Image (cartoon, rainbow, N blue to C red):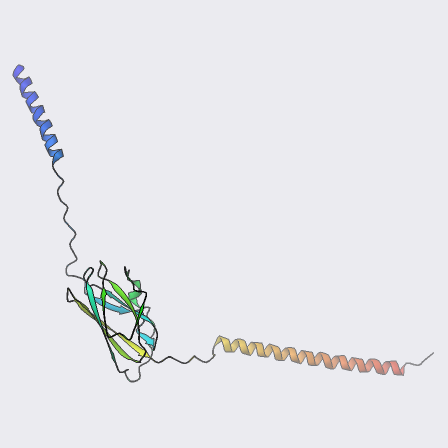
Length: 208
């Protein structure tokens, strides 16, 4: 009995010491999240693929390194023969979450250097005062990733002639005015005719 008590006490002591030892051990380090592989390719988009001379548009970049410097090169070539304004597609770049967006507008730039945010995205606003086909290339100065896009710059379009519903409303107003004028003329004629009849009746009525 005495020996079993000693053994039981020793086992209890070892269990207590082991529990404290386990509790005092540092937690295992969690592995850091790894970037997606293969990496997302870089992309350049614009707020509008076709703009008028002097109109401001935004260039959006994505898929570059976090906080990476990106060089943007702008090459303005001759306008393609017969180029027409393209339909506005809404510019997918407008949906990108951008951490930094410069408030200023760069006019006729040839080269710009911008810094991407932590997710590799950026935006910059530009405008050009000449027509032409604008090729934009973005090169990551650390990763070497390259993306490009094209913008067509056209002359300002003249205002469209009044058509459709506006013309219809004008015709309706004109018709109503004509009808109102005709009614006024008719009322005046009837009134004058009645006035003449009344005058004649008074002259023909015998006295006493």
